Every structure is written in structure tokens, then in C-alpha cells.
Length: 287
Length: 325
Figure (tube, rainbow over the protein chains, first blue to last red):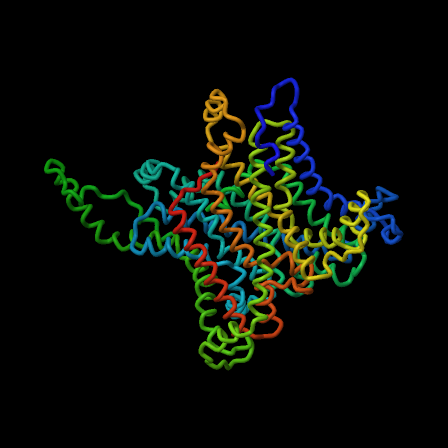
């Protein structure tokens, strides 16, 4: 780990041994990250026969344009339905989170009211409760509302338990000068108008952050859809892929194609929104 | 929402301090008349904004926690209408059946993995905080695994560890041919799964550390370089102190994370061959064996442990502000 540690600042002309080792370590790490993914990509282009012939996992596929596994995964794996469900859940839970988070942040930051401390503590303590542990009892609550096995169960849970985004919004609201509120109030604006016309538009960077973090974590979540939406037609990207395990058995070419199909949207989003993603997750994790 | 229409009238400094004598005639009637009508509404405004968030918070966080405490004292199976109060029986069962607590041993693998993870992340964050070629590319590659869907990762690594899969093939390049079933024995399986966890989560730690390191003003390095400090000295005296808050946060996340591991082992092995974790076991009690009471007791225990750990962290690192970007 500390191989490069005693290194001097590398001279500009001749890269020292430390610099070489640094690059070597980076190359090895990149290989460790990329190799498992690359192999799955290769496998997704192979035929069942190619996988069985014992040339090993790293052998290149015979036909680089063999997309039949993708067709199988897409069709028999119900990934289209899953994509629709995931999009539906994403749309509602993200919209809900943005509205709820920004309203909460506005109320907490701009008003003085009784029990304010209590409300804040309520949100704070909730961050400490790990969601996985309470599902035993949350399940009964969701079931009690008759929401079990509907898409509204995950939507409500994602909206109701997202305290991180409230904190991100809170930080941003604090940065908006109150003089803006006051000016608007003198013009006769009420609290709701101020929220809608002044605060909310100024929260754009925070909204971008929340949408990205929330979008990715929701897309990737497995536990909640697995628990609350067992019906096959209610599969999300995660649970639909998980169900590949049974019917496709040892058909690694189909499973790999499914995995690639699930990973590609993430990759595209990542490539386009890198900067926001780094900042977003850094903020999200530290709050 | 429209009810708030009249509530945000300008604050009346007039009524507070008493109006200056000169303006009295014009203002005296209006403010006092307004204030008695509007005071309740004004007080209501924040609550109108908080109604929905608080309802959700209470319904999906506090009610479940409360219910969980209650269920843990009953023998409820989760379905039948009747449940009997059994006192602390579930907790006694938890404590007296060693196989229930034994799964915490599996957490040790993940705890060890998080040590590796933090060390690796710290190394790469330090390296990439200096100017390097392809810096952004490396940063992207290292972080990307964190964004990948857990189920996809599970399958990627099932294939990786498979007989004749990626790992065996790579090893055969180096002339090592093994028949080792990586997920075959508890020891090897847990190590492999913990390795997957390192692969998946290092990126997050890395980006956190990198953010903290990059928020250090550049002049500090320049000054250090002028004074002839080596990179190691720069790390020790400039970088290390400034990432302490993020480091302590990572340690806490690592500990509570290793206690509540669920996704990777559940997806990859379903908890077979000794890879079951406490959460997997709890989920099985609750949804497979219909032992809601016992499962709730498990969840309460885990919750208590995590709260204690967080409390200890707050005590050890009092109020250090973690601020990035």
C-alpha cells in the first residue's frame, strides 16, 4: 500500500520508479474492476455451445454481433415490463422526494414554531434506523394499507424514508438569503408562493443532486421490490434480473445478457452526469 | 394550501415595539386587528408544509419501530389474528440458541473486508489527488462499481467464481490451475463474498476521501514542497489530519454495514454454505418461517447494536463537521 509513499516529487523529465509503480497500481486496480464486467459482456455474446466447449471464460466470442441472448433476456426475462415498472416507480418516488424534501427543508429553516427541535430530532434519529432491520414491522404497516404487491408500496417507502435528501435540501435552503423572502413578502407573497416561486427554483442544484442519487439508489434497490412486489408482472430491473436465476439455470449467456442490460443504463447516466454524481454521493453519504 | 394565502403577511414590527408616536393614527387599528386573526394561521403555516413529510416519517419509520418492539414481545406469526404476549421469551431464545448469534461471526469477514476497502480507497484517493495522466478516467473506473445494480454484481461475480469462470481462467494464465470451488466451503465462500463487497464499495470511500483531500487548499502543498517535504510527509501532515472526519464516518459506516450485510450473500448464495448473515436470518425468520415475533426481536437487537455504535462514534468524534465539495 505504501509502495509509493517515500517517493520524492517526480522530476518532470524522467518518470521515477515511484511514478511507474503508481501507474502500475492504477492499472491493476482498473483491471480488477473491469475484468469481471468485461468477461460478462463477452459471455453475453457467446452461444451456449461456446460456453460449454471448455475454452474458458476469457475466450472471445466467435460472433461479435450475436445479440440473440439479449433478445432472449429481453423477451423471456420480462425486462421490458421491468423497465416500465422501474420508470414508473422512479418518476413518482423522485417527484415525491423532491417535493417533500424541499418543503420540509423550507419549513424547518424559515419558520420558528413550537416543537421545531422535536421535529428535527425526529428526522435526525430516523437516519440512524437502518431500513433493513425494520422491514419486519414495516411490512405489516404496508400490508395494513392494502398496498402489498402494488407499485405504490415501494413508491411510498422511498418517499417516506429518504432523510438524506431532506438534509441536502436543508443545506441549500440555508444558503438562500432570507432577504429574498422578505422582499417577496413585502410584495404580498404568502408562504406558499415564496416556496414555489423563490425557494424551489433556487434549489435547482440540490434538486439535480437528489434526483441523481435517488434515481440511482432506487434503480438499484433490490430488497424493497423483492419484499413488496412478488408478482412476476411487477418486477423491477433488480427483481426481474434476480428471477433469471431459476428458469435460465446454467445458461450463463442469457444471465450475462440480462446483467449487461441492467448495467448499461447506469453506465450511460454515469458517463453523462459524472460530476454531479461524485458530488451527489459525497454529499449524500456524509449527511 | 390556499389557506396559507393570508398567513405570510409581513411581520409586524409595529405591534412588537409599539409604534412611533408620529405614525400612530394611521397604523394603530390595522396591525392589532390583523394580529389576533392571523396569529393562529401564522403558527399553522410551517405545519402545513410538514404534514406530508411527518406523516410519512411516522408511518414508515416510527410506527414500524414501535410495532417491532411490541411484536418482539409476542409469539405472533405475522398472519393469524391472535398473538400472545410472551414477555422476553424471544430474547431468551435469541441469547440461548448459539446458532442464531453465530451468524455475527460472518460479519467479521466483512469487517476485515472494510479495513482493506478503506486502505485501498485511501491509497488511491491520495495518489489521484496529485496530478496524473488519465486521472478522471481512473477516478471513473474506480467509482463505477458502486453505482452498479446489486443483483447484476451478484451475477457478475457468480460467474467470476464459477468453476472454469473468470477467476479460474485468470489464474490459469499464471499457470495456477485450481479445482477450488470458491463458493464451496464456508471459509472460502465468505472470503469471496467479502471480496465482492470490497469491489463494490471501495469506490464510495475513494470518492469521499478524494473530496476531502481536494478541499485542502493548494497553497498548503506548495508551501510544503517549498520546504522540501516528501509526499509521505505531505500525506502525514496535510492530508491525514484533514480527512479524519470522513475517515471516522467511513469506519462507522463500515461497522454498521458489516453487521447488516444482506444483498450480496442473499443474491449470490441465498445464505447457503455458512454465508448467512444476521439480516438474512432475520428475513428468513420473518418471511419464510413466519416467526414475526422472533424476527422482530432479532431486528431490535441489531437496531440497538447499531444505535450504540453510532452513539460511541458521536462520543469519540464530537461534532466534527464533515463538509465536502
